[in-house]
Image (cartoon, rainbow, N blue to C red; front, top):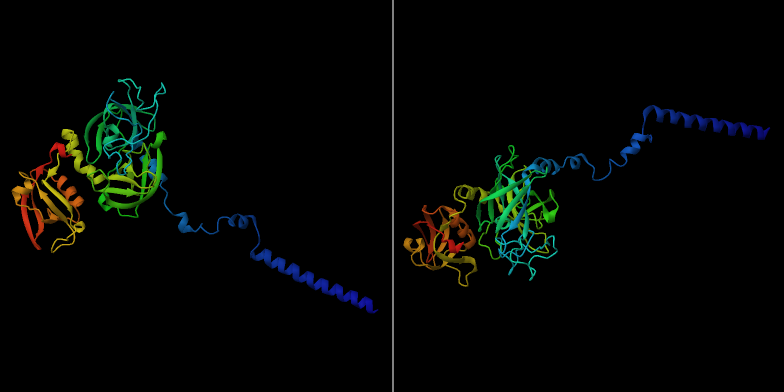
Length: 398
């Protein structure tokens, strides 16, 4: 009897436990709380760290690259026989004792006969080649590139990403800014890359370089603006944009785009064994394009002084911490005619502040010859203004 009661008790407990289990299961199925459905399993790899809605909304550079692809061209240059060039893929290596930005870079190629560029047994009529990039700036075929890409060119061939190929002519070139304007006669209106405002670009802003590095056409690299107003060895131009967007031989002359898809620079140089690339600000290009178009060259302003950074002098000038210190005034020049003297420190030029010698050089050379301007100086610790007429930079000084 006792064993029967124990069995009945156990059965009762089992019945109660079963009721509780199926009741809970019914509630679980009815409410859907935490049930491991297939949709929940799929969410396991979409709700993890790094997949927040904010991260999903980060913009991609792909739309800019796709939209601007038709504006970026591959440039192949056949050089004049005996032109003195010893390189093939264009991109200056900017380091001390290396070619300046108006010279090609250091990568060589071979012709169909297998003789390398610069080989001592090359025949006098051997024709070397250079490769670079360019960007379309007008519907009727004007293309902006680097001067060092087309330097010593015997022929220039432009190829678009859709395979269209044209022979181009050189309209004009400028050694100081390392820019050149070439022209093709397209079959139909071209897609144009909008020119932005390089002055508005800030260190830390995203940029995208496009071009044809090392023969790999239509390549895209991305980085940020690392700095502005950079000077490079053996180059008087002191306003390069520095970027860590990778730039390689063959990128020369290609565009540097901002997030708006506007050109803010022309890729020009790189420091070897680093990820530091440099681009000519597009505002510099916009300033000289009218002269390149009209006369094929750029005539720059000139004062006729030797200058140094005031901050670098052994004895700091009185009354000023920065500026361009005049070390020498050359005879018969606009500076001498205006009464400037050695020891003067230029602190403003035409109302614009001057902090360094490179800054003054940039302002002067971008001023049209014949312009009458006011120069603010500090002489013996006293500020004063000097009026002068800007001269034309002699060709030998370019």
